[in-house]
Amino acid sequence: MSILDDRALIAARVRLVERIASGDVVLSSRIAEAFLNVPRHVFTPVFYRRESGDRFIPWSAPSEGDPDPDRGAGAWWDAVYSGESLITEVDGVHAEHAPPAGVSGVPTSSSTAPDLMADMLDALDPVPGARTLEIGTGSGYNTALLSRLVGADNVTTVDHTPHLVDTARERLKTAGFTPDVVPADGTTGWAPNAPYDRLIATASVPRVPRAWIEQCAPGAVLVVPLKGTLAGGSIAWLKKLPDGTAAGRLMHTPAAFMPLLPDTDHAEGRPRPAHPQAGHAADETRTSPLTPKTLDDWTFSFFAQLHLDPHTTRTFTHTDGRQTTTLCTPDGCAATVTETDHGAEVARFGGRDLWAPIERAHRLWLELNRPRREWFTLEAGPTGQHVRLAAPDGRAYTWML
Ligand SMILES: C[S@@+](CC[C@H](N)C(=O)[O-])C[C@H]1O[C@@H](n2cnc3c(N)ncnc32)[C@H](O)[C@@H]1O
Image 1 (cartoon, rainbow, N blue to C red):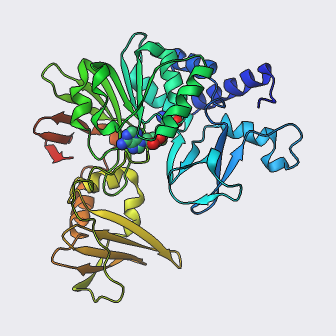
Image 2 (tube, helix red, strand yellow):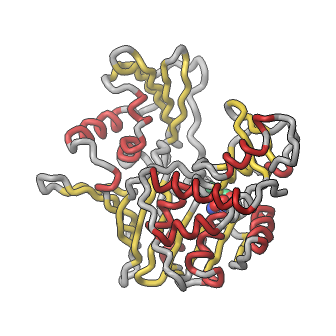
């Protein structure tokens, strides 16, 4: 497959590390060394290019003399060693199995953007010998980096897709690593190899699964992408304490990982929130000074969702450049919030006004001087998971996650 010689491959990896280091990420020499020594292309021989919307076209490693310059050798290698995430699976169809015309759907596996991986690995502090659990093997590239950092014998990685697991195991072997690659539902961790000193998830959860904390040894570090109702993605950095709880903070880095499936918030037989029927008259309409676009700020949307029924869903559409956000809850309430010149037009369906708590959250947000992600702390214990913020005037705020 390789049509780049070794020198060109090394140069591509050096450029990748330089790119990561020139961004927001503080790249330690150990993490840089891992990126320099672990090839990404071994794990992503075929991935998807997004053609438009939800349409994805498979893109393979080019062969000598590829006639299409856009899809030619240089472009493919540049994409692999760019800072971009590479989508490898769409609705369960791996890029390697996709027809040349492509597929439509939602990405279900990818090789995460290297900048983000570097930031998360740095936060994880993967010291040699640390027993490490990775949730979401995907391509296996991050597993390879972890293996390089802590030693492959100390790494366990789980993915719920057997094909991904088998392929990643083979490719890890090709790259010289033999960690334990397990086909399993990562929601419950992987008890047979516990306890772990480090746990990193590369799929998001609305809150940290109890099993992950239980399977960690006291002093362990957990790095977990959180994403809830309004899709305001962030990453929790937690330390397991001797009393069995885990405490830490949110990282500065925004991160919208694909969810750990099945979506735990809807896997318990709870009905999915339903959209208002077309043509169904609203129970009430009103105006709001708050535009639905405010929710596009991920830090605010994280804050806003702390004030909502955790099972609220948000979808949005654009008509003539104006956004309409629809919020729904499982009890049948809904709100459509349409952008206007001065804020929004709100239509309420059902007994509760779902936009009102977001308006209140926004007022508090401004009062607190738009707190940054990293100002929030997180505690996960047997009585629940709490997000806290200490305001400069000494007031402390607590929300259930
Ligand atoms: C962003 S990808 C992982 C990226 C990967 N670490 C890499 O370097 O290529 C997320 C992965 O989570 C996996 N996943 C989703 N739900 C899961 C579950 N319940 N248990 C285990 N893996 C899951 C998906 O199959 C997907 O491969």
